[in-house]
Length: 461
Image 1: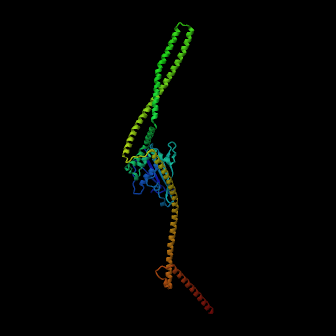
Image 2: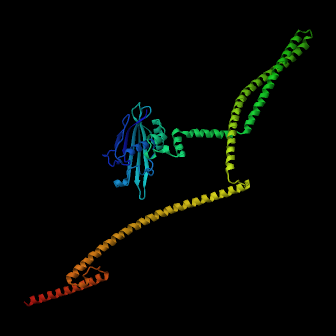
Image 3: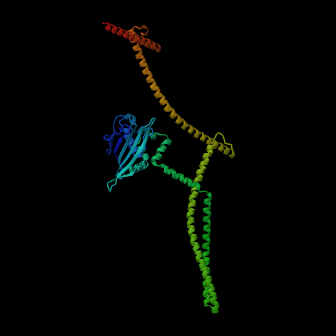
């Protein structure tokens, strides 16, 4: 009986990846006969089932955006990419130990994230040498080999054993979807293909082939009948010739003519004997042909039965077609030529639609390229706008500091026109700066004059 033993997780959903050699992943042991997994919401209970399913089948969980939501988010670690690993140790049907390993990577691009499968391996131990042997490294081979080793089909692993909680209500799906699930679980596709091949073979067997086989059987039967009727007559002729030879030998006629007649009769008897042998060989061949034709007759009968069943089915289809025809609101009155014209126009319209679709797809690709370029330009404009806003705010802060300094200096100098709560305009700031420079120059001149007077006074003294 197959079973799972251990599961190793690293970098899958809430299980943190191993960024250094010292960090170790999470090892989960499954006990027999039952293992119960409990924990609060978001602790990773469903992730364990998803990891088991991915290790066995290679299928990512639903609603994870093609694997992007299955791995640990690299933005939480401030990294450009995150590597994940899943290892599953299990026992196959014969009790042998196998280890399947799958490595993935999630990369953060400029616009979106990219999920990528790196490498996979299926490893076992050689019972004779005890060495580890890698059975396969291709993902497709591992996806096929692991369910075979477990003795369970891939559909049962996906929809029954490791069924995701989001898809657990598939038995309540609509009829068409439910039939698809059951066809996958019970492998009904092969049976359907066999029925299709039988139907195709029935269609290929036409009435002309059956008629030819019947005619061949009848001709062979007539040949066998004629050969059997000819065989007793040939035997009687041979007996007559033998009696004539004996009577000639016992008669009193001359010896020389008798011998010549005996030789002639012996030649005639030899020819009849040869003819008898040829007829016997023909009878044997005809008997063999009769046996083959009997088998062919049985095949013809079987094919005839199949044709009869097909005719019954065709009659049923005709009745169904008649019923559907009676339900039509209006009858089609177009002849074959008009229908051919409709078909040609439809083909031309279909070709035009396909060309239009091709043109639209080309336009879509061009628009996608242009959208990508415009998106990059928009991001650049957004960045420039952010820088300009930062510069504007810094300028506003500088203007506020300038106004505060102007008011403080004007208040200390007694300039009432600059003292107030109103904002200082650029003209007022320029005027203030000009007056302040004039005052500074006058003060500098007065200081120089005072220094000159002081120097003269010292010289006089």
